[in-house]
Length: 432
Image (tube, rainbow, N blue to C red; front, side):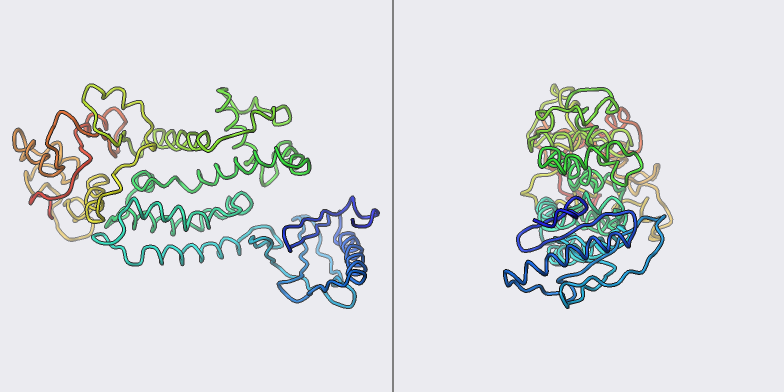
């Protein structure tokens, strides 16, 4: 119910007891004139109905946002009656800190600080050998930390995603119980935590789908972005069209026009979005050749090998949630192989001068060599070693895993096909 002469030049937003007014014009002076009219009307309305406006800092503020090409113009402070509304460089609206350049750097730093605090409280009492196991720690991270990080993420995260690289690295290191940093893609699959940029993409797709099916103003805004390739949020519409193309089984997203999409194609379920996320993550891993594993939670026979090979990499958990913290850390040491159990990484840290296998003395000491190639464990000795190491009673049936390797998928599959899930480091030759 703002004055008609400025109703077409401003936008008002309200949520609970918070309200915001946005004025857009070609010059700063014109914006100031529009906003002052709105403030005058607001003062008259409050004088009539007796509510009080708090114009102190962090309660009622004004901020000027300009483009790079705009000239800086000094304008007087806005006034509501006799109260002055101060200009600020940053302000918080519904939990998001907006700055005058729309870089959202202050928002990223505030979220990073909150995430570090929450993560420290969750993991302070967890080490490699005691505390919460990896599966539970991963769930806690997704529930208590990742939700904080992804709040309003489509608005601010894309420009500041690098700010969280150190946080994510340390989170993955803690969850996996690793002694040394391992490749990021490998660590994410072990911990069952999708890459942050993929989580942002999924969150953005959901946001855009809801926007297109809500009010006309939001729908028009998204359609306008699609027609403006230079827009800062144009990538959001690309992600949306890629999702719709995949859902419609089209070869290219470029044929998708959001203006022509039917309402039924904009609906989604939690299962549909989760499958899309796993497919995207799975394709990224296969294309980058970071890791290759296939797993199921139940025992399978060797005859089912080809069927299991078609499963998604990221769909199944690597270990069962009943494992203890010490067991999960030891298992993951053999999965990624970057630990002090193997001379290859002792050499890197200066703890030994010889990187050869401590048992056969012929090849480089790695997890793959120990389990599958070392001649010191050939024949019955190797079978006994694997049975003792992995606690397997029936060697004809086992959970199949094709684990991490730097080679191509076919070679990696061949090298690691005998790797068995249920293992606890118990052999004297692996104590290091």
